[in-house]
Each structure stands twice: as structure tokens, then as C-alpha cells.
Length: 124
Image (cartoon, rainbow, N blue to C red):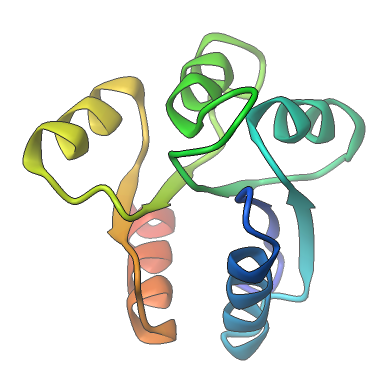
């Protein structure tokens, strides 16, 4: 997993820091941060080599779901996406999976959960 370049998308700077620190603990140093879906899509277009996306759902400007739909419709459609969100109802999870997320984590989460979900996504 060390060769991953991860795009971490969350409108909360605190949550991005938690994700970055968690990724470092599991051996991933190369992380690009974005504060919403629009910012994230711009980073995908300008930062070479991003090969994993971790995104929040509830964000201003472009939500995580809108971002996932845009990624899945374009040249980045092959990049695995893990959605990390407070939204835990089954309908939301189904909607996210239909949009094309590879897996889903409900906040708060442990480093172990993040690693397991990333392993599952990369392994599949």
C-alpha cells in the first residue's frame, strides 16, 4: 500500500488531518488534500498519479456524491473511491454504492477500519 497516492477530500480540516495521520500510521505518506468535490476534481486534473480517493459526502460547492458521479463519468473512473461519512442509513449507503464508491466507512472510524477497507478495495 506504500505506493498509493491518496486524495483526501473533506470540508473539515480537522477530519482531513485525522485521515492524513491515519494514512501515515498505515504507511501511506503521499496524500493530496481537497476541501470539497470541486477542489478535489481540480486536484485530480493537476496532480499526477493519484490512485486512491477517500471522500466525505456532506460538503459545500460539490458534495461527495456529486464528486463520485463526476469521477465515474470521466477519465478517472478507474480510481478506487472510499467514502467516509456520518451518513449511516442503509438508503444512503446503497445510493453511494450505486454512484460507484468501492466501499464506505461511517465516522468515527479507527485506523484499523480504514486499513481494512482500503485493503478490501485494493484487493478486489
